[in-house]
Length: 128
Image (cartoon, rainbow, N blue to C red; front, side, top):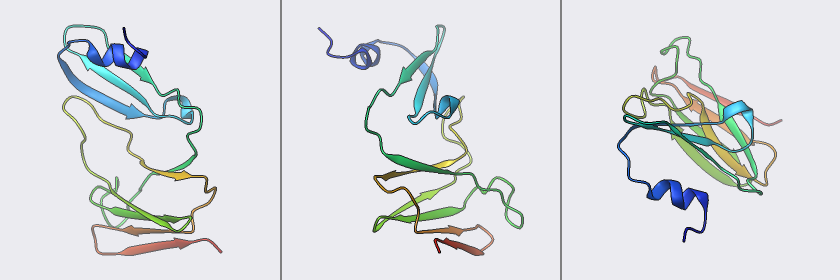
């Protein structure tokens, strides 16, 4: 017997060629869409109750490329540092959200954000 719907869905045998992680309808949790070859897609919902805060960073380059591909972002919040890099693609026949997502937990603000652009320019935003 399956303990959860996720366990049931993930145990199904299928040939999948893509998946998409995105915050659909701007709700708090990410959703996962799995594209099954020759069949219906599968939408997985995150039903966690206490997910904490998050921030999504969409990069828009002016001197570097427009989509910020290759940029590295550092987020400092509640004494912790997280780093993510904007990549051009994330899967075969699919594409994730273009924003970089950072989980903040209980923190409600970001203390500092640094963007290292591919051009070599460094941009820093700090809480005042």
